[in-house]
Image 1: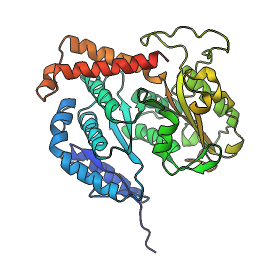
Image 2: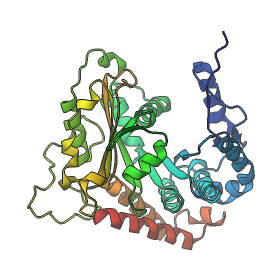
Image 3: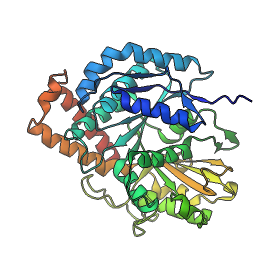
Image 4: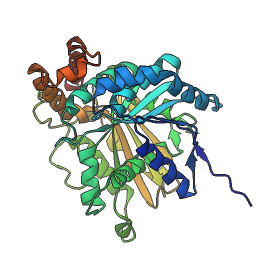
Length: 400
């Protein structure tokens, strides 16, 4: 009997062929699914870690061929819900071309949802100009995307080391953790409203749940439990325990369930809320705009999520009924008998964003490397516009 392998509805874009050829072959070797061998675009020259090269040179030059590939995939859909782009912030192609292609998607499909999943660079530095590239990418995406789902390399690396017990961490290990987290959200679910309904448009449902205002588009993801397969066989979990940990991870802005600060508490009703610290000081309590919890596994219908409906967790301009949503699926996910995921629109990124903008500004003030960008058409005024955009985003989140 001939088994037809599912083909991913995706377009792969890179300015160098190596990663794309590896990706195509790994998917095909799995025997479970594959990419369409015609739905990818690559060249033999990279962007040299220069955002301006990716955005101003490669993007316009190859716009037509890339958008034709996207159009072909879109036409195969019975019902196009939107686009989910996966890209980095630090380099030249992923960030520069990623921002350019996102803008093209917005122009070509003005009514479709666009969610950009972005990889936040290591704090220790991957590329000397990563702060410039990050600032330019984030500010451009803020104009064209509906939401940005952020994964931090440092946080994922920590999960690999401390929770998965991996001694020599590879990109593949990091990607597997990210894929697990994304799968925990985007695998099929039922959304619990007045009546439980099967989600036909996960992107649309995600936006409806988490992005009530275009000023606030930054989403973070927490997933528990996460552990090595060896440990999984000897572990049992209860829903009350998982939910208690997940709620405290939100409150204390912890990236994983190990080392959560249990001292951080939201203000009690009737107590004045302490004045917010400026973003460059540690925020004591992570205020949310909206939260979505996704539960998968045994007995999901009986889980008590009252703790996430506490008004003290949220900004005052949205009621907890509108600010909190839950999706459920009674099937176990990825060998975990019970798993819980939190997608949060909150102040989780405030300190990191302020840090990256501050470092980029210090470089810009001394004109470091600016000539590398101006030679590809990105002027000093463009930098200033980007700083202004992100300062406004930081200010909006800081004032929650």
